[in-house]
Image (tube, rainbow, N blue to C red):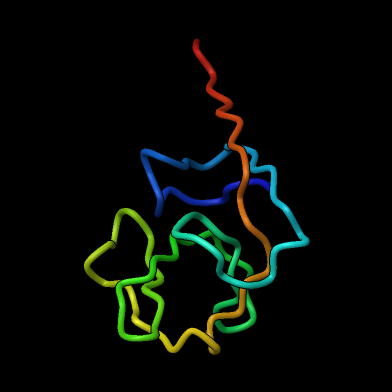
Length: 89
């Protein structure tokens, strides 16, 4: 999967290539996942902050994340590796 935006910079930037595990379809640990938000697959950090919910956010807008009930977070895959592709000219 290729990163299309810089919402998670500097950890993930446009052009980075992600290796994802499509076998992971439920939250199991705090980390980076591909989640379905309004029908779009997007890369987001997902964190358990207690209270039975999960906090879903991007790094650049961490304070604008959403706390959602665990069962409503639709996880499509877990990000397991990132390849940083940078052009030096």
